[in-house]
Image (cartoon, rainbow, N blue to C red; front, side, top):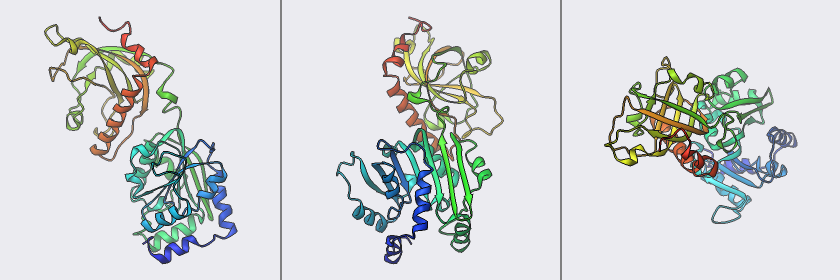
Length: 365
């Protein structure tokens, strides 16, 4: 639909001064933009936001659109600075935002101007944005024509715009289980602006948190039997009851650190060594029904010689915090994020401060 020559010509026409001012106001709502910012412009069209982003000093812009004709026009208006794509400038990505690969981020800001209602699943779009943003990054949802105009378009073309713009209460409900905080919501008849922020409290800079290192020792117990084997990510479940004091320092979410299983003497020596680990503390909302008690699940990055070690003691030293607990739409989405979490854990545990915890005094020699 948006690839027809007629539509492209309409998008290329100069905008009225009033609309340009609204677009400037929309971009002005994003805090902290500057020369070092990386911005994803989702549903960029022919790039109506780009001049306003550049006026804020932004040099690194990834324009995303599903229309090949729109992307072609963008490339003509803003030639790529380099064929390798590693230099600041306006780059383009043809396709659905939901399919943008993780390596294209993380971004300081994501703009969804005149496109949010086009997503079939608003929660999934918000989740994707949260995963593409840096800690403290902002998501801008906006429409320069406002709610009334958008609602009329939704009524006339529901196949193109399946959702209305959410009001403040609806936005709060949408982000209830996501690492977002609502910073601003302007819902006027002729202008809609919502700004969300990935809370720094949820994902601290450098994945550090003030309580680290947190030391825990406990018995491996059975879990609820959902998820880990299906996902191919086996976990050792620690009995949370004796760990209440330590868990008070660990909000629900994903952590990384070091782990040591107190394996029998006839097991290989590697099974008794200290290994990198990823740990989830929480209720696993993607696979659980919602009424289960919180669990402590440790995925040790080591292939043990035995599949089961219930009743054995495991020691962990928690070094950093990756992200809060998030409800995903299904196991494939969860697995993709777990793989990303493991990648973060591996790299962060190679950093000197975290690597030093491998020889923590709580581990047996």
